[in-house]
Image 1: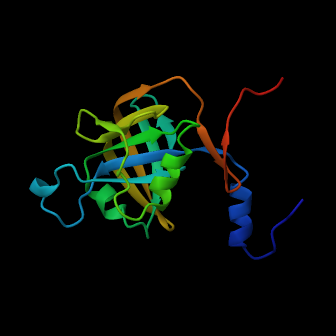
Image 2: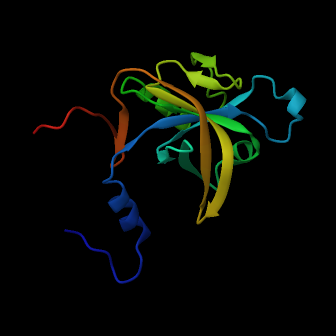
Length: 174
C-alpha cells in the first residue's frame, strides 16, 4: 500500500482520488462572455465534468465544480440556468468532443432545447435543468449549487470515469 510523504504530495492525492469512480456529464448553457444578452441567440457553451452530485431532495439541489482556469467559467458564473446531461455508456465520443474540442463543441451534436432554451443532449441517460442558485470559491475551483427545476431520464447504463479511463457499469456480482 502506498502512503504519502510527510509533506503533502499533490500527485499522490490525485492518484488516491482516481480510485473513486465517477459518472460523466456534460454541462451546457448559453455562451455569455462580453456579448450583449440580446446577441446571445443560440450560441452555446458546454464542458465535460465528473464533479456532479446531489445535495438535497427538498429543495432539489445539485452541486458541481469548475476550475478557475476554465475558459467557460465566465459564462457559467453569469447565466441564470444550465443543464447537466448525464452520459450513457454509448456517449464516450461525445464526452471526448466536449472535453477536448477546440472550436464549436456543438458541431454535429444532436440536441433539443429545454424550457429555458438550453441544450439537452440526445441520448443522455438523465438531464437536470437548474437555476444557478449559488456559487462558492474554494481552492482552485468554483462550487456551483443548482436548484433543479426540471429533469428527465432514460433507461441504460452510465459512462464512468476511474483511474484515467472510461468504463461501463454492470450489476455487482453477489
